[in-house]
Image 1: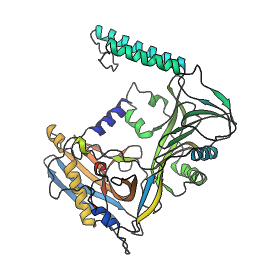
Image 2: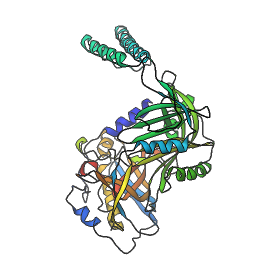
Image 3: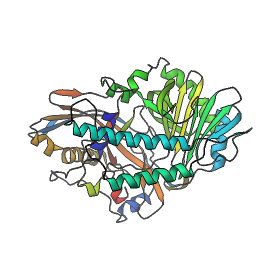
Image 4: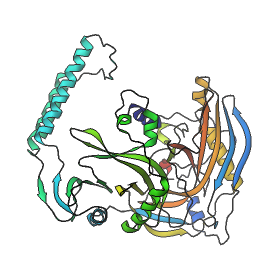
Amino acid sequence: MKRIIAIMLMLCMLTACLPTPGTEFVVNKGDKTLEEKLSVSLESSQTFPERWDEDEYKVNDYLSIAFNAEVLTKADGQYPVYRTRGVELKSEDATTWATALLASPVSVSTLEMTKDDWKNALQRYVDEIEAKKAWIAAGRPDDGIDRDEYVPSDEEMEETYRMYQEYINKAPAENETKPVSDFRDLPKGPRHYTLSDGTDANIQVYAPGYIGIAKGCVANPYVYYDYYYEDEKDEDDMVWPKLWQDVTMSETDAEKLLTPALELLGFSDYTPYSVTKANLMDHNEGGYAQFVTKGWVFKLHRNPAGYPTVGVPYEPAQNLQYGSENTMANAYIPAETLEIMVDETGVRYFGYSDKKEIVGVESTNVELVPWEEAQMRIKNALATCYRTDWLKENNIKAEIEVYRVLLTSYTLHIPNSSEYYEMPCWVVFFDEKQYDVPARMRDDQNLMHEALFINAVDGSIVHTDYGY
């Protein structure tokens, strides 16, 4: 897990871009030029090549880029833009999905921390401080345990102790369990259900709009992906690899179970954009992870226009840095996400977040930037925002090879509004080679693929600070 934390920290570390070579990439600054393009709908179809093959070119002494890429676009050449807005999940929604996925419940119990839970947490806090003091007094021996050297002051410890005492006083002596016959009016927060078939289920409903339903879990279900496992399996102190069980079910068999489940749940117009092997874990018995089942996780989004997708997990590339930390571009953009885990028995985990409703069609077929301009924008973004300063500082030569360019739909926030555009976006997948060690991901579903995101309407880098 340390490596996951380190990766997340890397994603948040940004340094300034080098001066832009050639034409500067653009970001939409809310000057209405994008909206002007969206107000016009083309009648003709727009076509793009099926491949982008270009010899490697040298950006500078430390970076070179080549293009050996498949280009995936819509077959009909029509690129609509929808306008959506976020809506909070209702209790009726959660009840409908729980009823469709689970056997009828027999009893339900809250999952609050009890007085004993808080007392144990307080004791762990005290023990941790005492162990840290003893470690420092012993000269900080290298015992292989990560410790923060900071020891709270007496005043800070007294304040923390007071806080724990308040939690202990307010907490219930034990969690309430009561008989039920349905999932009516699911409240916010986690609940443990005992089902009529003797199995357990955990349902969690959170504001402003997330629900998780897990069959076979009691307290805190967690989906653990294969690419995390591959990344950490060599670490001796990791718990996950010891629990991980390899997935033997084929993706094809999983898809056969997914399709009727989507129809049952009312998500038949959703399309998978990520398909990954996974294990479902449950954090109970004092918070320790326990294996529940293994299977495939499909992440899906609404795709009414039939935009192409690819079945690999991807996110903004950590080695691309767009300006200072005050103009962070690879920040999270809230996109409606449906997550379903399937094993041989059917759906075992259902997660849904950031629900959106379509409120209108902004353009039935928006004009996209010409292919030549899109190529230029992609080249320039890679050349400008790759961490060349870091390469130079460490005397490293890097090679980038673009292997896939996907024209799909992406959720983009409308400035000064609570609404979003679901609009065409170029997703550029690339491999990197540093230290003469290649990082080839193009056909590997067990890795998180890095990508560059370019607005296909105006050529701008997807940049959340400016609304796009």
